[in-house]
Image (cartoon, rainbow, N blue to C red; front, top):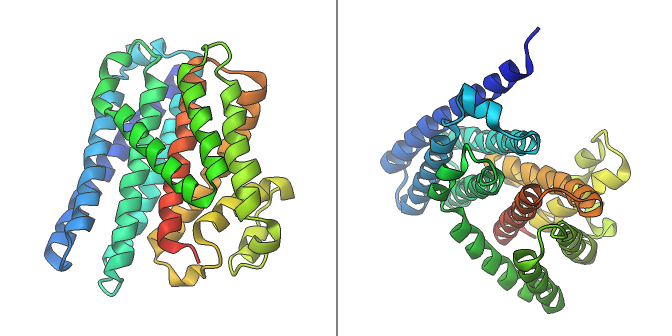
Length: 310
C-alpha cells in the first residue's frame, strides 16, 4: 500500500515525463512542418511557442523534489492536480495534431488553426501554473519566469474586444468584474467568481446558445449520450455550440474535434468550480487560479469560434 507522499511523488514524476515527451513530439512536428508544408511559418511558430511554454512549466515543476512536495499546502496540492489535468489535456491535443500532420492531405488552414490552438492551450496551462504556484513558498521564486501575467493581460483585452462585438453591455459588465477582481479585498475576492459565471453562462451562453438551437446540431445526439444529468450536460453543450455552432464535426480534422471537446469539458468543470467557490469561498490563491483559468479557457473558446463557428 503506497503512502500519500509516494502517490504525490508518482504524480510529479508522471507530470514531468509528460512534459518531456511533449517537448520531444513538438520538436519532431516542427521539423515535419519545416520539411513538408509550404508556407509553414505560422504553423511552425505556433509549435515553437508551445514548445517554449512547455519548457517553462517543466523548469518550475522540476523543483518539486521530495522536500518540495512535503512543503506544498493542501489547497496548493489540489491546484497542482488541476495543472496536471490541464497538462494531460493539452498533451492529448498535441498527440491528435501529430497524427493529423502525418496525413499531408489535411488542409493547411486547418493545421494552422489547430497548431494555434495547441499554443493557446499551453499558454492557458502556463497562466494556471503561475496563479497556482505563486502562493507556495517552495515554488514562488521560480514562477516569474512563466511570464504569465502579460499573457493574461493580453487575453483579457482580447476577450473584452470580442464581447463588445457580441454584446456591448456584457462587455461593459465583464470590464467591471475584471477591475473588481484585481482590486478586491482578498477576503471577499471569491464573490467575483459568481459574477464571472453570470457573465459567461447566465448571460452570454443563454443568449447565444439556447437549447432550442444546440439540440438541432449534427453533434448533439452524441452529446446526449453522455451519462450526465441534463443540467450538467447543458454546461457541455452550450460552450460547444458557442465554438462550432452547427458545424458538422466530420468536416473537422482530428485535432480540432479533440480541442473543442476538451474546451467544452473544461468549461463544464469551470461552471461547477465558479458555483462552489463563489458561494462558499476559497483562499485567495485558489480564487485567483480559478478566475484566471476560466478567463483563459474562455479566450480559447473565442479563438476556436473565430475558426469554426457556423
